[in-house]
Length: 388
Image 1 (tube, rainbow, N blue to C red):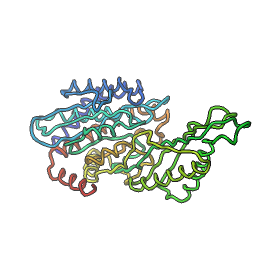
Image 2: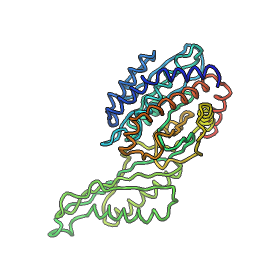
Image 3: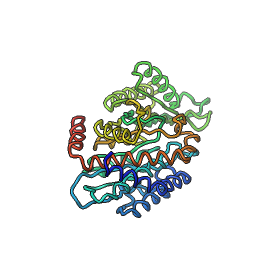
Image 4: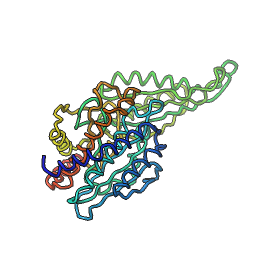
């Protein structure tokens, strides 16, 4: 490892306790999406202390922020993504307190170099667990002129190359006509019957689609009283597929099922998206290879092969507009299951502190490579444009 990278590793160790204190406090003050005022302010205060200019309320989201540190020397612009929302009841069972702190820490580490070129951004993105703040950030052009976007996620293995499933969240409303369920049933149109027909159709559809397509739904409204024929019934579905184009085909099939279910009972049907759509994650392989090399130089040699996460991440939308990575790094023993209280506990333990140090070092070293290695950046961009 060359001298400048050794310097960055030492800077990370010097900042370790301060960064961990940020992660710990966020972890002990869990906040749901778009309510992460404590977390957002904690990260903003840390970055301001280290010389970053911070604008809060980015893209109209009160808990989003954009922090900048410019070298005033021409060069690339890189962005570290910070997440910090928690899950209901169990708190930081996905380790977002570690993500936000590591990204802010990596940026602070890089800012200490007298040889810095270009600009470092830290983009605070709220509500990853719910509607996906990064979608709004993308739509508002926050990633314009960014050359590379980097973040990490706690997991059960070290996985530099991941993909994820594209996601659409659809709500179907069936409109019928109310009537007394016994005395005047022939005058009613049962919207709940339409929903039941819809689920029967979906179950048949599931047998025809490929295994990497997922259709999961619930009934959110099914009537108001047993003696009234339901005039309104509502179902919500998550549709997932490996590729956006495949998801579009699946969506049309599901909509046709809903239309058919409504027509069987003479009901009407309307639908809309009740959450943002997520695109599949496109890991930039050149950037991920750089991240992997830096892990290896730090003695991390247990590297898992590329994997497809069975969930969906809003970083997928970012990866459509800028070269991006979303690697997983092992938290604890690797046996703790995300979205559980056990994962929350380990994210607040000494294992969480160790992971924050590793992540901020790996991210900082990779960021430095992007800022200073012109051939690497050209390779990253060439790969990105070939995928578009």
